[in-house]
Image (cartoon, rainbow, N blue to C red; front, side, top):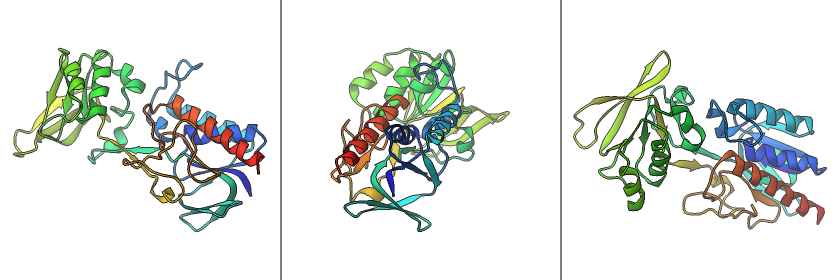
Length: 305
């Protein structure tokens, strides 16, 4: 039996494993895909304290190597359920394997909602981004398009407008749905253009990099246009994948774990960390903080058994 089983190998999950091992507890990290999570989509990470610049993949590789050196174990599998058996939690994977632990840290992260266009996945990090704070500096003095029209898209566009030559918002609805005050702030800027009632049809590339998007008027299907751009920021929402764990941890109306900065759930011995948790700011620094908090809480819980 492991002391701590971590579900998810992103920054929060790997930090949880690191802190567990450093506190003398055995840790298993179960990750269904590649270690690192969303940060691996960033070609450069320049907002991590103590490191001037590194790629997201470099961060993921270094952190994975660090937890392995500390003695953590890893499994590549998709977790489908957790059984609470009182003295132990049993984590069940898609292939039927079961792992027992005294505690569980759920750090499943989120997925960015995509546009569903051909070649989109291949262009992530090569012209398509999701975070103005993370990647906005790479487009300083350039033209970018923001897909979306809610609060997230407006906030991204406001940040980008401070750096970019031009910011164009493409909203698929007849009007922008974000807060009126955010719209006033954004559209007061002379380098911002908003276009509503649009449907993005195609990503235009040159030498494997994004150079524009083709779109049409959604309501009529007419007026196909190609807008040249240096980058596309997709801000149409995030998708948490917390459904399999709803029996152990409450979810809010958006599907995020309804847990505060203490990373606790209503099930003793089950903790949550990272972007899957209800929070205002989702950055690598906040994910790491959650991982440390959840792991230390798990260690305290074990010590009191």
